[in-house]
Length: 357
Image 1 (cartoon, rainbow, N blue to C red):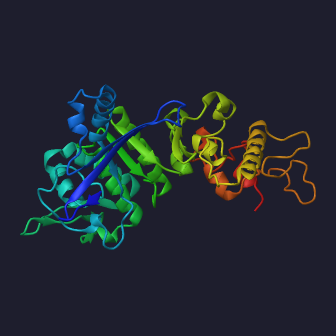
Image 2 (cartoon, rainbow, N blue to C red):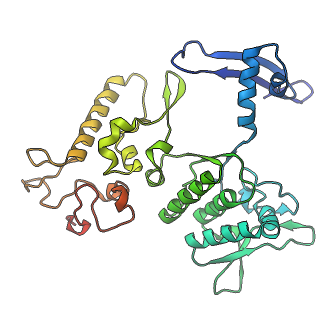
């Protein structure tokens, strides 16, 4: 954005397209400054076939794509403020109008409303229902009531995670989910059970024809998605590179490890990289790959397990039953079919109770 002498905002647009391996010569076009976007005009013009085709392809994608940020649940967060009845065409990106939007959905789409309430109850069992009553000036705020209590609670009396999950459920289960929704780190502050439910409603939205893009580094959230649903973003030579994991290269791990575990084991890429540290990074990656191989193949001939530990109980080593994973890793690095089962160690199927205290 650029501000001219009359304090009017001007939009500076340029188009950049890069495909294939020709990264040194991307297609770029500076469209200049203006008060409105030039893309709609380009789609109707045929002066430049390449530019026309590019704009025609990009415009419909961007028009139906919206980005949402529900991370702000501070004292003065938009979601805790009052909104005006009628400000309900769609849910805003920061959920500022969530009360007005819920009020509309309850009256015009009762089936969606009941689905939202039921989903919130799965995460917060004591939650009863929303209290959506406009004041005389048609202002409304998010309130709710608890089962077994007569009093009404305000939005700031809900936990941060509960409030974020209400926003997520409202978006993903509401009647006006855009064709493509982008959510940045939606798992922030959520209970592990809520993370699983978030993944489930995301898949429901996908089956209903919507695209939901989740930007995350969360191992638990990633564990609820198949390898084919993952795209890894990395910074390469000053540009963002998007790649899909190579299923053939990971075939030996897929039966035993969830997608989140593969991410935690640094097998999907996306590693932090530092300029001038290429040798260190290469050595670190080699160590990670060797450790991952040991995790896949089990103990070596000397009886050593990955991440240390041994079946032989030598001095200085853990005795029989040592999994080689600390409590933090045991929580997230489970076998795919053992996720949520607290009684089994994922790597060698030994009871967690056998681990040394």
